[in-house]
Amino acid sequence: MFLKKRLNLFSSFSIRLRLSLLFVIIFGATTIFFNMFLFKAMIDTLQQDFDDALFNYSVDVSEGIEIGVKGDLSFPPLRLDHGKILPFPLGTALIQVRHSSGAVLARVGNFGEFNPPYKKDFDRIWAGEEATYRTIENIRNIPSAEADSYRLISFPLDNAVKPQILLQIAVPMTLLETQISQRLALLQLGIPLVLLIAMLGGWFLSGRALNPISKMINAAKAIKADELSQRLPIPMANDEVKKLALTLNEMLVRIQEAFQSQERFVADASHQLLTPLTIMRGELEMLQKTEKKDVDQFIKSALQEVDNLSGIVQEMLLLARVDAGLGALNIQELSLDELIMEVLPHCERLAQGKNIKIKFDINNSSGDEERKMIKGDNDLLQNLLTNIIENAIKYSPNNETVTVTLNWSHEISQLIVEDNGPGIPEDQLPFIFDRFSRGSNTEAKVKGYGLGLAIAQKIARLHDAKLSAFNNVNQGARFLFEIKNN
Image (cartoon, rainbow, N blue to C red; front, side, top):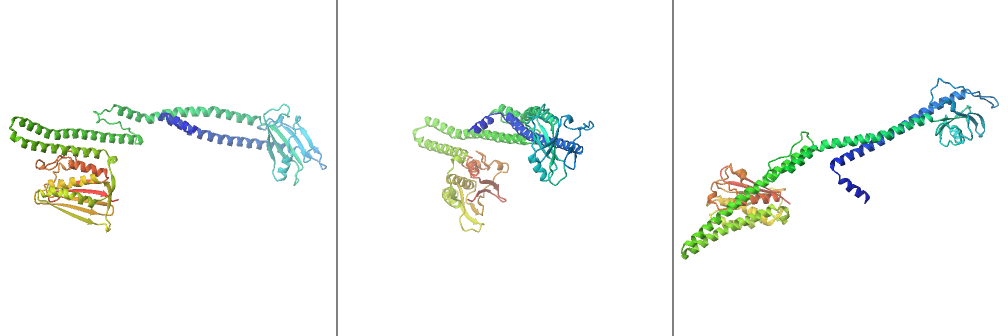
């Protein structure tokens, strides 16, 4: 719960602040761990240098000690060699010679009550070590101690297989402590300073990196519904921010096209609805001036215009349902050949009025005997099939044939509808699926509202299918509908 609250608090910060904090956290953690490693390595190096100097000093001291035949010691006063540069003051060293029994054979320096340990040192030397080292931090028993800790070396004096006499020298670690203290103080001061610089640098760099996004935000705020032609500024750098700007501009293009399409739709729909209303109004005004015997003719004409209005409204309602998207679909498993067989009787009635024959063929190139199934909305797919077949019938001359071919393959089902009409004018072919578009020069002779193919294209896209229109080589138009098999 505590961590979740901290994460929620962090998420509430601005991106710039979050980037800066993350940069400081990552850089700071890396810096701290790296410096800790370096500090440890530095201490080990200084300690090794200190121990090497102490060892050399012990060798020098041991060379001045003579052991008699009976084990007596000759321990002359030590001479300070001022030519040596050691990490400890020579005059403050505590030197003693000790027997394995614990007896102190000789001492130089003010030991006071200080009694250096020796038993484990004998064991380690007997085990084969050349010398042993230990740090003495309990210095309360050393009179006038010159450091917080002393370094003790135990060095064998006799050359026996199991030495019995040790030279023990304890020296203050003043210089080593000073060096460590100085470097630690430098790290304690330097790391916060480096992190502060990193924070400021991260804040500055994140601001520079997010500056194009800020410009895009301001530009997006300035775009109004009547200014959709404006676009967001595109950064020079070829990075993710540029891709974001390009993507948003592409989205603005689609929004602009959708707005323009809606505006054209409203204008065209208003015109389509206004025409039958104007006719009805004119006929009703004439009805007021005519004799009652002509009432039936006027009512018949008015009913025809009402039917036209109902047809336009129904297709507009269907178009609105299709525009609602996948949420309005009733998806189920269907067979495309059964759908065609269901819509053909309805199309036959229109074909009989022009003495047109509908030829239906099924080709199975997959080699499978099983019927290919698709997924989709039954009512909408029937509407699509009806629209493209009726479109072929409307634009075909009398006494011709409309060919409907269903091709099955392993992956897709393909429906081809061909007619022998005048075809689609080349300049109108790219707009054949636009709303209220009617591509043939014979459109004045063909009854319709120009919404059927637009609805069919919308239905195809909703089903992740493809609907295309072409002109045949000889004459007539060809519509191709492709949908994936289930």
